[in-house]
Length: 366
Ligand SMILES: *[C@@H]1O[C@H](CO)[C@@H](O)[C@H](O)[C@H]1NC(C)=O
Ligand SMILES: *[C@@H]1O[C@H](CO)[C@@H](O)[C@H](O)[C@H]1NC(C)=O
Ligand SMILES: *[C@@H]1O[C@H](CO)[C@@H](O)[C@H](O)[C@H]1NC(C)=O
Ligand SMILES: *[C@@H]1O[C@H](CO)[C@@H](O)[C@H](O)[C@H]1NC(C)=O
Ligand SMILES: *[C@@H]1O[C@H](CO)[C@@H](O)[C@H](O)[C@H]1NC(C)=O
Ligand SMILES: *[C@@H]1O[C@H](CO)[C@@H](O)[C@H](O)[C@H]1NC(C)=O
Ligand SMILES: *[C@@H]1O[C@H](CO)[C@@H](O)[C@H](O)[C@H]1NC(C)=O
Image 1 (spheres, rainbow, N blue to C red):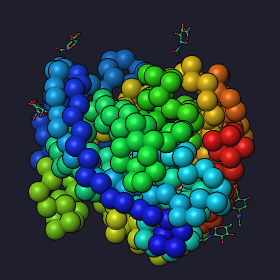
Image 2: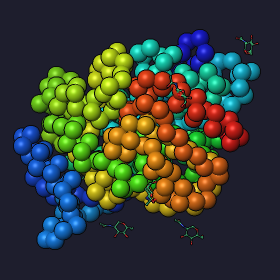
Image 3: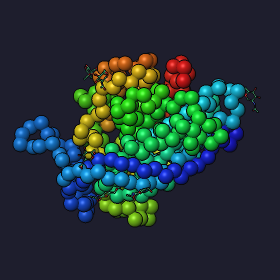
Image 4: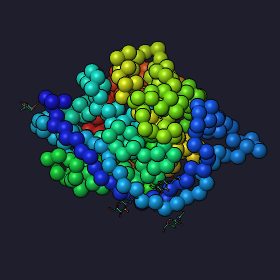
């Protein structure tokens, strides 16, 4: 990044006020409990007498104060594209932190930040609460989606008003880029307030319920209590934090198992972050819904994405009902990224996906 971009790291204080759900189940005391939790999460609920899984015992209005680790990068040579005032605000998915966007492995092949900056754009990336250099919180409480959303809203407002943007000052455009859970958050953000964003690119996501295979993917990844998987790495986290049982679980969920770069896979395992059990619960509530957002929207998902497409995104399943959900978006585009698993940025030909994303922004006038 040295040659093409200037990057600056931040530790950002954020205060949230949310209506939090209260975890009502016993906390996990073993991986048998985690197995039971996943069965509750994925089991068929349409046939009586099984009721939808509800692990909550109530709600409470809470205030939370967090520190959020973030990085802002902008191009050194602005004569290249002149897009530097467009800031991409990137939210990573479950299992990673902001290094999903700015890895240190083979950066010319896998770094989205480096690619975006080389095209003249600026990018702001942060660690979702509970990961990376952000505040460590309980896996049963503060990681829940309402709080994650409040943090994203706060960061968006800060970036838009010119905070945490190095010497760039106030951006002219803020584009939200998400991967997986980060896409759910970015979508929910504009669903709540269509004026908060100038464009969104949602990667590693899908909306066609018939095609989704979250139960298979959740069982395939074999989540275990993180401290039982890597005691030293995850020391101090409570039992609400889960990690893939081994690298094969990670591969099933994020990679194309018949076409991957071992170096990218091992790096991805090295930087992997645990996910909070309470983060998984939107999966029960379903995808976010229709929005009046009128800006540019791109949906880009790997061709062999397991959770969103059951391993095959072809046949129009990425197009519908996505197009109906974003009926006011202009332009609207979906892209099936050939040969890629769910974790696009670490799959082969990641720069091919980055090119499709950045071309879309340029064509959309962002
Ligand atoms: C939280 O505050 C809102 C707004 O004041 C109120 O409508 C809601 O009932 C409160 N929720 C709880 C669980 O107290
Ligand atoms: C969750 O955290 C909030 C502070 O953010 C605290 O007020 C609340 O009691 C916690 N709830 C549980 C169930 O631990
Ligand atoms: C968060 O910080 C605010 C302002 O400093 C303070 O009033 C509040 O009590 C804090 N809340 C928590 C849960 O620590
Ligand atoms: C900036 O990029 C332009 C166009 O690619 C090039 O002509 C110029 O030499 C570059 N300047 C620096 C300082 O690298
Ligand atoms: C879109 O806007 C219309 C008109 O203001 C409103 O009735 C509708 O509820 C909005 N839809 C969504 C999904 O927010
Ligand atoms: C899911 O995709 C199939 C195949 O393209 C399509 O027939 C179906 O209508 C889609 N479902 C929805 C809800 O759009
Ligand atoms: C890489 O991705 C781009 C964009 O989807 C595609 O056009 C190209 O064919 C891909 N290359 C390979 C080798 O798959």
